[in-house]
Structures are given as C-alpha cells and as structure tokens.
Image (tube, helix red, strand yellow):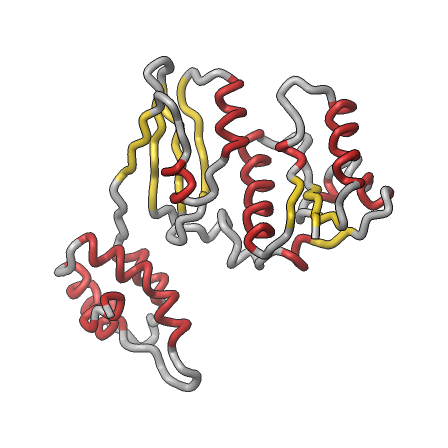
Length: 244
C-alpha cells in the first residue's frame, strides 16, 4: 500500500519537522508500506503554492493518507481528505508513544559528531538504546544547503549513519556511558530489590558490562514466562544473563 504522510509543518522548527516525518516514514517502511514523505518532494526556497502542487500530485497517486498526531493544526491539512483518499490516524499505523523513537522517555545512548574542514562547528546526532535517531543539532556556520542535505538524508539508525558517504566530513563517536540510576529506573524492581546492594554490584562492573546489562533489560523482561517473577536486580547483574 502506498501511503502519503500528512502533518503540521507551519510554525515548527525545521529540525523538529524533519525528524517527525522521518520517524513516521521509518516505522511505516518497517511495516511494509510504500511511503511518500512530502519533505522529500520539495526544495528550500519553494513557495507554498509550488510545494502543494507537487505534493497534491503525489498524494493523488497514493492509496491512503497517514495523519500524524498534529495534522489537525495545519490550516490546509484537510486537503488530503478532500481529495477522496482514505485517511488513517497515525495511532492506527504507528507504534504507541511509549514504543516510538524520540519520545520524551528516550535515553540517549550514543552520540556522534560530524565536522567538515571547510566549516566551523559540528553537527551532532544522538541515538537511543535501540540505535534509533533521537535528535540532531547544528552548531556553527553550516550553510542552509548543507543543513537541508543532512536533514533529507537523516540517518534514522546508527547503521545508516555509518554507511553515509559524508565526503570530506569526519564522523566521531563519543563513548557510551550508563549510570546506575539509568539502570535502576529501567529495571524497576524497587519494591523488592535493594538499591544499596545492587549499586555495589554495579560499581564492580566494567563500563562495557554496564552498557550490556542496561541494553538487555527489555529483552530479559520479555522472556520471563507468565506467572514467574523477575530476578532481584542484584541476581540479574551477578548472573550476567546478557552474556548467555
């Protein structure tokens, strides 16, 4: 099924808009949909009328429209519905806010900086513990054409970021670091486990093992048979289940 993305654009920061549409495009493609992202159709400097002419033409060739959660705030956002295409709310196609990337609960696990010899400053990409893009920031004197090019590329996963040809750009990864509080909050067995004892075990672990332990929590919880209690936090750490 070919699906057209529709959402609020007017009045929002450019980076926020590109990430919002890229999130939806990424998740829907993962589910097997053929996606038309309007932000990939238009170029910087185009008038609203020119963009709408191109977007409406593409929309007419789609089977359905995915309305992002904020689509109702777009003054002209009802155009797709008036074109006679079935409109589906984002919630019906995309994961819940808790499962979606870049939610308010996102924990930044990886950070990459991209620098170019010809420009001052750096472009920062941050990714969550599922290796999905959680943010991008431009610092320095990068020209608008470069910012637009990066936003249209928008590597949603770490793997894609590492495979992009940045030409003379230098991509640097900052080391991952997980704090005990991050682990304690995610494991969330505060009623039974001892925080003091768990932290003692945590502090004896290497930073690499701490990252593995943190990343494995959700997989461990999903593997627990129904009716079986999860391990105490200290037992989870001592058993090193992420190495099984």
